[in-house]
Length: 287
Image (cartoon, rainbow, N blue to C red; front, top):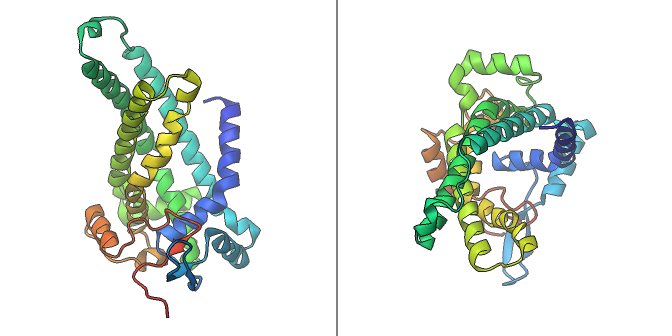
Protein backbone atom coordinates (compact mmCIF):
# COMPACT_ATOMS: atom_id res chain seq x y z
CA UNK A 1 0.00 0.00 0.00
CA UNK A 2 1.67 3.22 -1.17
CA UNK A 3 1.90 6.41 0.83
CA UNK A 4 -0.33 8.18 -1.70
CA UNK A 5 -3.05 5.54 -1.60
CA UNK A 6 -2.90 5.52 2.21
CA UNK A 7 -3.37 9.28 2.25
CA UNK A 8 -6.28 9.14 -0.18
CA UNK A 9 -7.92 6.40 1.87
CA UNK A 10 -7.49 8.42 5.08
CA UNK A 11 -9.05 11.49 3.45
CA UNK A 12 -12.06 9.49 2.23
CA UNK A 13 -12.58 7.87 5.64
CA UNK A 14 -12.33 11.27 7.33
CA UNK A 15 -14.82 12.88 4.95
CA UNK A 16 -17.39 10.12 5.41
CA UNK A 17 -16.80 9.51 9.10
CA UNK A 18 -19.76 11.56 10.45
CA UNK A 19 -22.09 9.42 8.33
CA UNK A 20 -20.44 6.22 9.47
CA UNK A 21 -20.45 7.38 13.10
CA UNK A 22 -24.18 8.14 13.06
CA UNK A 23 -24.82 4.82 11.31
CA UNK A 24 -23.01 2.91 14.07
CA UNK A 25 -25.17 4.56 16.75
CA UNK A 26 -28.30 3.73 14.76
CA UNK A 27 -27.15 0.14 14.34
CA UNK A 28 -26.68 -0.10 18.11
CA UNK A 29 -30.29 0.99 18.57
CA UNK A 30 -29.65 4.46 20.02
CA UNK A 31 -32.47 6.76 18.90
CA UNK A 32 -32.32 10.08 20.80
CA UNK A 33 -34.55 11.91 18.32
CA UNK A 34 -38.32 11.60 18.52
CA UNK A 35 -40.04 9.89 15.57
CA UNK A 36 -42.61 11.68 13.45
CA UNK A 37 -45.58 10.59 11.33
CA UNK A 38 -45.94 11.11 7.61
CA UNK A 39 -47.60 9.51 4.60
CA UNK A 40 -45.40 7.31 2.42
CA UNK A 41 -45.09 8.24 -1.23
CA UNK A 42 -46.22 4.93 -2.74
CA UNK A 43 -49.27 3.79 -0.79
CA UNK A 44 -50.06 7.07 0.98
CA UNK A 45 -50.27 5.27 4.32
CA UNK A 46 -49.46 7.13 7.51
CA UNK A 47 -46.32 5.68 9.08
CA UNK A 48 -43.82 6.52 11.82
CA UNK A 49 -40.32 7.59 10.80
CA UNK A 50 -37.12 8.41 12.60
CA UNK A 51 -35.35 11.58 11.39
CA UNK A 52 -32.75 10.99 8.67
CA UNK A 53 -29.06 10.45 9.33
CA UNK A 54 -28.38 14.12 8.61
CA UNK A 55 -30.65 15.16 11.49
CA UNK A 56 -28.78 12.63 13.61
CA UNK A 57 -25.44 14.21 12.64
CA UNK A 58 -26.78 17.65 13.61
CA UNK A 59 -27.81 16.24 16.97
CA UNK A 60 -24.33 14.84 17.59
CA UNK A 61 -22.83 18.21 16.69
CA UNK A 62 -25.16 20.00 19.11
CA UNK A 63 -24.15 17.64 21.90
CA UNK A 64 -20.38 17.40 21.33
CA UNK A 65 -19.49 20.18 18.90
CA UNK A 66 -17.97 19.87 15.44
CA UNK A 67 -14.98 17.81 16.59
CA UNK A 68 -17.40 15.47 18.31
CA UNK A 69 -18.44 14.26 14.86
CA UNK A 70 -15.03 12.61 14.55
CA UNK A 71 -15.09 10.44 17.65
CA UNK A 72 -13.49 7.11 16.73
CA UNK A 73 -11.85 8.46 13.58
CA UNK A 74 -8.24 7.60 14.46
CA UNK A 75 -8.82 3.89 15.15
CA UNK A 76 -11.07 3.77 12.08
CA UNK A 77 -8.24 5.09 9.88
CA UNK A 78 -5.76 2.67 11.49
CA UNK A 79 -8.15 -0.21 10.90
CA UNK A 80 -8.52 0.70 7.25
CA UNK A 81 -4.77 1.02 6.69
CA UNK A 82 -3.94 -2.25 8.46
CA UNK A 83 -6.71 -4.11 6.64
CA UNK A 84 -5.68 -2.76 3.25
CA UNK A 85 -2.00 -3.54 3.87
CA UNK A 86 -2.69 -7.16 4.83
CA UNK A 87 -5.20 -7.69 2.00
CA UNK A 88 -2.85 -6.31 -0.63
CA UNK A 89 0.19 -8.28 0.50
CA UNK A 90 -1.64 -11.57 1.03
CA UNK A 91 -3.39 -11.22 -2.35
CA UNK A 92 -0.05 -10.57 -4.05
CA UNK A 93 1.50 -13.61 -2.36
CA UNK A 94 -1.40 -15.85 -3.38
CA UNK A 95 -1.29 -14.53 -6.95
CA UNK A 96 2.38 -15.48 -7.28
CA UNK A 97 2.13 -18.75 -5.35
CA UNK A 98 -0.97 -19.96 -7.18
CA UNK A 99 -0.97 -18.39 -10.67
CA UNK A 100 -4.01 -18.77 -12.89
CA UNK A 101 -3.46 -21.51 -15.46
CA UNK A 102 -4.64 -20.69 -18.94
CA UNK A 103 -5.01 -22.91 -21.98
CA UNK A 104 -3.90 -25.97 -20.03
CA UNK A 105 -5.90 -28.94 -18.82
CA UNK A 106 -9.07 -26.82 -18.71
CA UNK A 107 -9.30 -26.81 -22.50
CA UNK A 108 -10.98 -30.20 -22.53
CA UNK A 109 -13.42 -29.42 -19.73
CA UNK A 110 -17.01 -28.41 -20.13
CA UNK A 111 -17.77 -24.71 -19.93
CA UNK A 112 -19.52 -25.04 -16.60
CA UNK A 113 -16.46 -26.81 -15.12
CA UNK A 114 -14.15 -24.06 -16.35
CA UNK A 115 -16.51 -21.47 -14.87
CA UNK A 116 -16.66 -23.20 -11.48
CA UNK A 117 -12.89 -23.73 -11.32
CA UNK A 118 -12.21 -20.06 -12.06
CA UNK A 119 -14.91 -18.90 -9.66
CA UNK A 120 -13.81 -21.11 -6.77
CA UNK A 121 -10.11 -20.37 -7.26
CA UNK A 122 -10.59 -16.60 -7.33
CA UNK A 123 -13.09 -16.59 -4.47
CA UNK A 124 -10.85 -18.77 -2.30
CA UNK A 125 -7.91 -16.41 -2.73
CA UNK A 126 -10.02 -13.35 -1.93
CA UNK A 127 -11.60 -15.02 1.12
CA UNK A 128 -8.20 -16.01 2.55
CA UNK A 129 -6.85 -12.47 2.07
CA UNK A 130 -10.01 -10.90 3.51
CA UNK A 131 -10.12 -13.25 6.49
CA UNK A 132 -6.50 -12.57 7.47
CA UNK A 133 -6.98 -8.81 7.06
CA UNK A 134 -10.17 -8.86 9.11
CA UNK A 135 -8.69 -10.98 11.90
CA UNK A 136 -5.59 -8.77 12.18
CA UNK A 137 -7.54 -5.48 12.13
CA UNK A 138 -10.59 -6.58 14.14
CA UNK A 139 -9.22 -5.51 17.56
CA UNK A 140 -8.87 -1.97 16.16
CA UNK A 141 -12.38 -2.28 14.73
CA UNK A 142 -13.74 -3.16 18.18
CA UNK A 143 -12.00 -0.17 19.76
CA UNK A 144 -13.36 2.15 17.06
CA UNK A 145 -16.94 0.92 17.53
CA UNK A 146 -16.80 1.18 21.30
CA UNK A 147 -15.22 4.61 21.12
CA UNK A 148 -18.19 5.77 19.05
CA UNK A 149 -20.66 3.93 21.31
CA UNK A 150 -19.42 6.02 24.25
CA UNK A 151 -21.56 8.84 22.89
CA UNK A 152 -24.66 7.14 24.35
CA UNK A 153 -23.49 7.36 27.97
CA UNK A 154 -20.84 10.06 27.60
CA UNK A 155 -18.15 7.66 28.86
CA UNK A 156 -14.38 7.75 28.35
CA UNK A 157 -13.24 4.13 28.69
CA UNK A 158 -11.84 4.21 25.14
CA UNK A 159 -10.39 7.71 25.00
CA UNK A 160 -6.97 6.57 23.67
CA UNK A 161 -5.39 3.34 22.37
CA UNK A 162 -3.52 2.41 25.57
CA UNK A 163 -6.55 2.90 27.82
CA UNK A 164 -8.73 1.04 25.30
CA UNK A 165 -6.47 -2.01 25.19
CA UNK A 166 -6.25 -2.11 28.98
CA UNK A 167 -10.03 -1.72 29.36
CA UNK A 168 -10.77 -4.64 27.04
CA UNK A 169 -8.05 -6.94 28.37
CA UNK A 170 -8.80 -6.34 32.04
CA UNK A 171 -12.54 -6.94 31.69
CA UNK A 172 -12.82 -9.46 28.86
CA UNK A 173 -9.38 -10.94 28.24
CA UNK A 174 -8.07 -11.63 24.74
CA UNK A 175 -11.51 -12.76 23.60
CA UNK A 176 -12.78 -9.20 23.97
CA UNK A 177 -10.59 -8.03 21.09
CA UNK A 178 -12.40 -10.44 18.78
CA UNK A 179 -15.99 -9.84 19.89
CA UNK A 180 -18.32 -9.98 16.89
CA UNK A 181 -15.68 -11.54 14.63
CA UNK A 182 -17.56 -14.67 13.53
CA UNK A 183 -20.60 -13.01 11.89
CA UNK A 184 -18.26 -10.50 10.27
CA UNK A 185 -16.16 -13.26 8.70
CA UNK A 186 -19.25 -15.15 7.54
CA UNK A 187 -20.67 -12.01 5.97
CA UNK A 188 -17.38 -11.27 4.21
CA UNK A 189 -17.12 -14.80 2.80
CA UNK A 190 -20.72 -14.81 1.59
CA UNK A 191 -20.33 -11.36 0.02
CA UNK A 192 -17.15 -12.33 -1.86
CA UNK A 193 -18.70 -15.50 -3.25
CA UNK A 194 -21.94 -13.81 -4.32
CA UNK A 195 -20.16 -10.83 -5.91
CA UNK A 196 -17.76 -13.07 -7.84
CA UNK A 197 -20.53 -15.43 -8.93
CA UNK A 198 -22.85 -12.67 -10.14
CA UNK A 199 -19.99 -10.76 -11.80
CA UNK A 200 -18.83 -13.86 -13.66
CA UNK A 201 -22.37 -14.64 -14.85
CA UNK A 202 -22.99 -11.09 -16.05
CA UNK A 203 -19.59 -10.69 -17.72
CA UNK A 204 -19.72 -14.10 -19.37
CA UNK A 205 -23.28 -14.12 -20.70
CA UNK A 206 -24.61 -10.56 -20.80
CA UNK A 207 -21.75 -8.13 -21.51
CA UNK A 208 -19.42 -8.05 -24.48
CA UNK A 209 -17.49 -4.79 -24.11
CA UNK A 210 -14.45 -4.84 -21.84
CA UNK A 211 -15.21 -1.30 -20.63
CA UNK A 212 -18.61 -2.41 -19.33
CA UNK A 213 -17.18 -5.43 -17.51
CA UNK A 214 -14.91 -3.18 -15.44
CA UNK A 215 -17.92 -1.92 -13.47
CA UNK A 216 -19.73 -5.23 -12.98
CA UNK A 217 -18.18 -6.08 -9.61
CA UNK A 218 -18.97 -2.63 -8.20
CA UNK A 219 -22.63 -2.86 -9.25
CA UNK A 220 -22.97 -6.41 -7.94
CA UNK A 221 -21.39 -5.28 -4.68
CA UNK A 222 -24.18 -2.75 -4.13
CA UNK A 223 -26.79 -5.47 -4.50
CA UNK A 224 -24.97 -8.07 -2.42
CA UNK A 225 -24.19 -5.64 0.40
CA UNK A 226 -27.88 -5.25 1.13
CA UNK A 227 -28.27 -9.03 1.21
CA UNK A 228 -25.37 -9.54 3.64
CA UNK A 229 -26.12 -6.45 5.75
CA UNK A 230 -27.55 -8.41 8.73
CA UNK A 231 -24.11 -9.95 9.31
CA UNK A 232 -22.62 -6.46 9.65
CA UNK A 233 -25.39 -5.37 12.01
CA UNK A 234 -25.08 -8.42 14.24
CA UNK A 235 -21.27 -8.20 14.26
CA UNK A 236 -21.29 -4.58 15.39
CA UNK A 237 -23.82 -5.22 18.12
CA UNK A 238 -21.84 -8.19 19.39
CA UNK A 239 -18.60 -6.16 19.26
CA UNK A 240 -20.08 -3.59 21.66
CA UNK A 241 -22.27 -5.81 23.86
CA UNK A 242 -19.51 -7.09 26.23
CA UNK A 243 -18.31 -3.54 27.01
CA UNK A 244 -18.95 -1.55 30.21
CA UNK A 245 -20.96 1.02 28.26
CA UNK A 246 -24.51 2.33 28.54
CA UNK A 247 -24.98 1.46 24.86
CA UNK A 248 -24.26 -2.18 25.74
CA UNK A 249 -26.50 -2.16 28.80
CA UNK A 250 -29.38 -0.85 26.70
CA UNK A 251 -29.18 -3.93 24.46
CA UNK A 252 -31.00 -7.18 25.25
CA UNK A 253 -28.91 -10.01 26.66
CA UNK A 254 -27.56 -12.32 23.97
CA UNK A 255 -26.25 -15.86 24.42
CA UNK A 256 -24.33 -15.55 21.17
CA UNK A 257 -24.40 -13.97 17.75
CA UNK A 258 -27.11 -16.33 16.48
CA UNK A 259 -29.31 -15.31 19.42
CA UNK A 260 -28.65 -11.66 18.56
CA UNK A 261 -29.68 -12.40 14.96
CA UNK A 262 -32.86 -14.14 16.10
CA UNK A 263 -33.94 -11.35 18.45
CA UNK A 264 -33.29 -8.63 15.88
CA UNK A 265 -35.23 -10.60 13.28
CA UNK A 266 -38.10 -11.20 15.71
CA UNK A 267 -38.35 -7.45 16.33
CA UNK A 268 -38.18 -6.62 12.64
CA UNK A 269 -34.81 -4.87 13.10
CA UNK A 270 -32.47 -7.11 11.12
CA UNK A 271 -31.99 -4.31 8.56
CA UNK A 272 -31.72 -1.54 11.17
CA UNK A 273 -29.52 1.23 9.82
CA UNK A 274 -29.43 -0.07 6.24
CA UNK A 275 -31.46 2.91 5.01
CA UNK A 276 -30.17 6.17 6.48
CA UNK A 277 -32.62 8.50 4.75
CA UNK A 278 -36.06 6.88 4.98
CA UNK A 279 -36.00 5.31 8.44
CA UNK A 280 -39.28 3.58 9.20
CA UNK A 281 -40.04 2.85 12.86
CA UNK A 282 -40.80 -0.86 13.15
CA UNK A 283 -43.44 -2.31 15.46
CA UNK A 284 -45.04 1.06 16.15
CA UNK A 285 -48.37 2.36 14.97
CA UNK A 286 -48.86 6.09 14.25
CA UNK A 287 -50.94 7.92 16.80
